Image 1 (cartoon, rainbow, N blue to C red):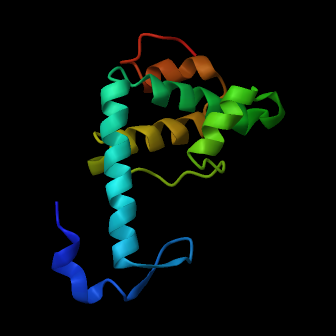
Image 2 (cartoon, one colour):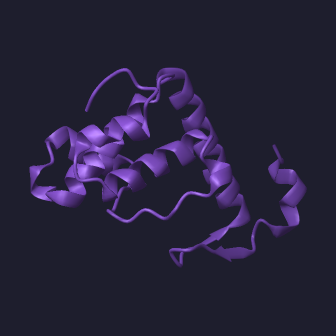
Length: 128
């Protein structure tokens, strides 16, 4: 992990993100640290990857019939910032918790049946 000090001279320079928000390198590294902490916690609390299964199923409902989302499904999708649009996941990211979640969301947005999510996330012993 690269420390912030190694990029100290560049931390005040603004960078443009895909969503056209300017952030400093320091802010970008802070966001990456939060993401790493979240994925570490997720790996510890959800060893069977049941969160990606739940997200896949919720995305299926959100895409097909958004008014049929339960309050819990809506809350989970809003918590992770799901907007209905998911960019494709690079092959190298599929083995990461973040990549797995993004892939499950992407698959859920094109599937028509939440039960099909068990094929996307077979390691979870639960069903949607």
